[in-house]
Image 1 (spheres, rainbow, N blue to C red):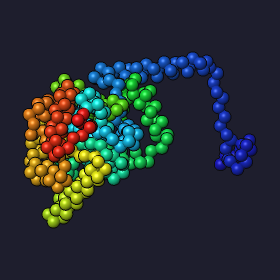
Image 2 (cartoon, rainbow, N blue to C red):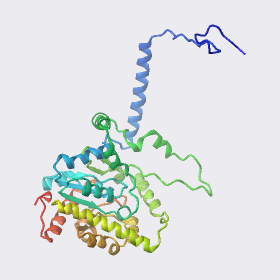
Image 3 (cartoon, one colour):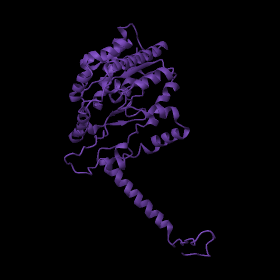
Image 4 (cartoon, helix red, strand yellow):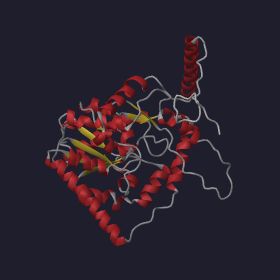
Length: 371
């Protein structure tokens, strides 16, 4: 056993290890470190710009919370868009403002069912404007909220520090760096690399939904041009959808239980529509376009007569289905589920016109539609 009497701590058996800081030109060291950092950062940024990436606002929960604030800041009027990625991608906010004079409040979230968010607008706000609800059947009628369930929780629980962090990111970092995107994060990139060779019995993980869009500060979101113009990348998106569409259906409860669940869902939706209307608002359901295997799957698993028609009948709300109008079908869907950016202005104009007609048939006009 070793012992030491030189330790400053008499209860410690070993003396402290003291190491002198080596002499050196620390200004040169710091400068060299900064240069290495800048070169590495520039190389990483340059690589992603060569992969079609451009600076874009991150479609984060913090950005959603700031957008949700507009309901309160604007006195509960205007247009609120609630839905999944199709409503997020397909409605062009600037075109809507150009036609009607109103900039919609974009609350749709990709990969996420809209029912909890419609309930939030109905029960937790005083919104009395026009609420447009996108219907993408697998997400709308499914039991789970989906990918972005935390957005509401972030809105309810955020702190001043969260708001400052969001503002700093949105105003300082995001406008400058193309690599500052969830799809280009280092660990996300590494996760996509094929580590294990394919072999019999190996079950591959589900594919990751790759980047499909770019977003602005007002949550105006449009399809990334690479999805439209790069055939190889477009095939990556299509292959991902094929994989998801081929998954076996989840186990279903007994028919009588399923009937109770379905009735409860429609009762809730009817109550939410009634609550918004009681304040002088209006609700319109919209079924945006889809095509190819996506549309085939939706028509097979969610027949229109058993879902869309029942939704409108039970809630008493107006509905716009793309299959009913040639101008809503006259769009290009590169990966079968979202409208290419160049077609969203004409789709938005056509949708506004059909909403005007649908509400006029009910003896109603809305200032949010420029009427």
